[in-house]
Image 1 (cartoon, helix red, strand yellow):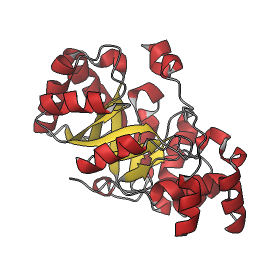
Image 2 (cartoon, helix red, strand yellow; image 1 turned 60 degrees about the vertical axis):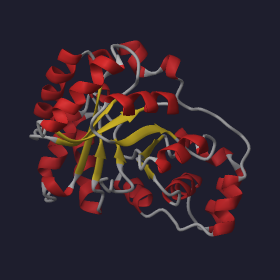
Image 3 (cartoon, helix red, strand yellow; image 1 turned 90 degrees about the horizontal axis):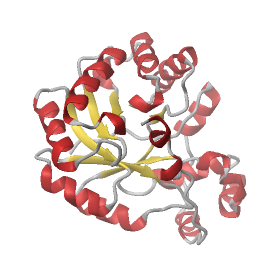
Length: 266
């Protein structure tokens, strides 16, 4: 199974082309080696421009994109993957995801095309996003390719421990989106207190907690260089600090599948 560099750079919502390209270029300069985009984000071309503008060789960056739910019919997967590569300015990606298991998604019809694209060298690896354990079981039965990643919302208020245990047992990396809790980390006392003791932000503590979970790769979003560096240099938490975060009982899902972008755009 591949080692997916951590942390990655999330680009959801970064649809200002110039800003996105500069963010990617700067992130690579800082040391990020994992870039995450998607057809849904409408920024693949800008991500590609950032890669091209960087002095980091393409082969040194782990590049992932995702197929929009409305494009998951077999012919559309083939056609739009080629379009994604063209926008990114690359011959292949390192990881190609099913973005959401909805829209045009049909496991029996959709997943064999991902095998086909892996065999053709269009993608090195196959991943899924927002899959439950039942959906992972179904996908594993159909795919010849190993599922190397499941990208899901994960943070201290949504630890997804059962899903993480499942993925660890099957050597599936959990790629955590919304790791900075969309601005809500400061409202969690444990994160605020621990951040103060490390002279850092509650968001950095949330990110550090994820990075110290075995089998998890967070993909924080950032634009400015200062935020990019802060995310890349998250603090090391003590065992007692990790235990305090683990003990948080409050639960909140920040991304509502019923209101997600695919539901509006698809």
